[in-house]
Length: 225
Length: 358
Image 1 (cartoon, each protein chain N blue to C red):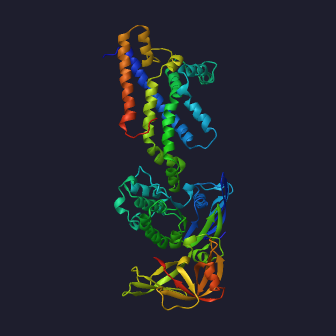
Image 2: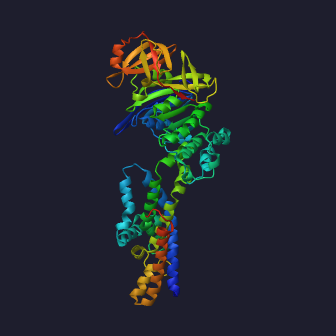
């Protein structure tokens, strides 16, 4: 099975996007998950629901709103304009931002579950042993939630690889910039290039299966997201 | 503010539970917070540790103020050691790293050698193990050692034995007794077990429904029958005694306490050792004359001090002075009536059994 240059470019771009999005979400999603797992605030419900929205929303709806927000008259668009940055739609950066929102629940929910499973007690024990809350987070919560981080990372990565609707709305279809593998397959099918579509689809299928196998089978008894 | 005291005032209202405490504890020895579950003793301990924050409260430890109005020291800044009901060891760290966790977070000047603590709790052979490879008793020993490794100025213990079966309890109790004797810092010990309290405590705080029912030095408080501490079958007094004689022929030891002496099974404790003796009210009968022919070996003369109702309407508690010491006997009200027991009356105490606690 040999991929064409265009296909390969799309695959590499896809992996690049998924890596960057996963990295961004590790940093952005961890505090959100920690807050959701530990807060007694009445905002826990609403915030949790907002984080979960991408799970149920059609990607085109999310993409539509993000497009408006990033457009010249949207809040994000005005911000980028004021900062002298090019508008985000149809750029790789725009795609990253959109994907971060789209994949947010896949990072936050496994982490939140992992943090909740730890409970208060180890952190209380750490506090009585002179660890500040931040110190206790890094030395107790983080190591104990490590399997949750693995699950969250893999799921976020895989989910970003698989996105299609949001990419089309935000990124369009620019080779090397926003044309990811899922869009490339769509193009092949539209052009009736079934052979090429087959190759790329098979690569995606095998990749996705291996990723999920890592999560579900590699660690027996692990918590499933 | 007295320099050598712990002062605690907490007002806390939760749905279905409130804590309303104004208490001064001695700055040395073991203070037991005693009460049934739901009495608020653990909540009080957690407030002292800073794990719970009472909206209104004041807490001073010796010359330091830990809570006062808006001032509130978070738990990691308090010089405490805390032992949880379940050992709550960090599962991802070895025993040694659990011990080191708190120790390396205190100022170097206050760090002490770990070896004496490891020896005291007999955990030297466990240092490389992860907590999931320890027995329940071993875990709790490590938990207590970990709390001591931060060289605390106050040790807070929340029913450290309650998660253990009775064999494990007997395994840990001697360590706690050693701890009490060797440690010169105050210990606040939460328990619902009269036996543990009798063995370990110097000061008793009885709690019920989020309030302190009574508090005072253990021996005096247990000997007072006018206080509403409900111990039921466990009512009784604790005496300080010295092993005065050992009778090898009958395997008995004579324990002298202020006002008299008691014979008990010889447990091999050396002559001259100071011991605690617990005498339960249900094990004492009263008689108006000294019957010579009885299987009861411990018969002491005393003078009735007071009579009070016990929990059951058919029972009464009688406190009897034996020299400077006071013992408490429980008898039926009918027996008290027939013996015409009145304060000041001379009686004989027949003591069926005593529990010697090293």
